[in-house]
Image (tube, rainbow, N blue to C red; front, top):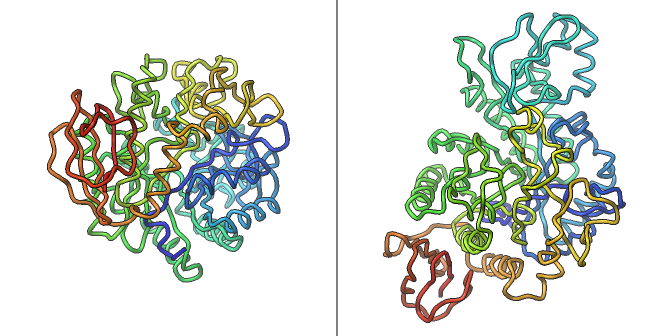
Length: 511
């Protein structure tokens, strides 16, 4: 695979706790993931991205990292992680891991040393300690400052168990350079950077958001890119960057910064032709001058599953106002999700698939409150259900729970009717969501990926474009069937066609 593999890659996101359980304790792990690598190769993805696999008290699903150079014991150990990387590479699958540079765990050695050393110590200078708290709010709800026994307060933009690093401290810079080398030396192909835009803080001026996208954050990524380019020429950085402003977003993709970043603008767009066309057009226009490939994302471990979202009256995604519990027409959502899959896969650049998306899994809205684990549920005083509904363990096989996920009781409960959505049930069904993804990803390898697109003439409620290979993608978002353009072959359709017409909420690839 060439060094530019990432420009048009199909990347599969693994939420390790919920992927596959190899030891029967109800928690997904590396043994389970290794046992399912053949499934991922058969699916046709180029790479896997794993959410944090480090030792963690799990106050925020592993994003409270206690040690960046080891593996969470419930997932396995460092030796098994190295075997996984080797086995993935043998199957032609690249490996991307998460690095969390904004915050640490309050159980880390650094933070414990900071508490023990006291005010004014070098150990406390690695974090943000103050004698008086500021008025910033946590992204998870509640205040962003917590007091320690000696009276000082420390900053945490997320949960109190996640103290923020002080990136004005050279020690913090050196620590993360060392972490990058540690994993690159073990064969990791890419780093996904969590909360990439919020590392730098400005406490002056009373800005309630004095931490998002400050100019100095770009210096951090320039130094990371310089390290990678000089010592590891084929490794990549991917930013988690949430901005409604695509121009600001694009700054992270300058040639000496990150290689790619998640396109949340596309993910958040409603299932409406004008909004999707605007998102696609703006994305392409802002990426082209930088020579950076766009990415297309429909879902991840933080957002409502796409089948449920597209079946609701409001289909857009608002990070700050989750619509959990709102009624959803899952049949409609399923049809739209199939069409959206072909749309996302056909666009130029890379595409991300969140585990279970290829099975058409819906959001699990009815998790019993006593079993919810997301800190958003706790911090919102039980008013925001949180993200557990998209993190329920995958169904692999069989008619009874836990559907081949493992032998123990899964850490979050699976719906009983998921027996219809298992990998086993869908594998032999040519009309299943899994078969659609397998077929789409196979064609994508040959005909799509990196490149450009040309919009084709169409009705306002239809998206139609041609790719470099000549493949034409048509998506009908209108209520009435749409005539197909002239073609010699139907390569793949998200649903049955009506003669030479494309039904509502259906996508097709034509030659």
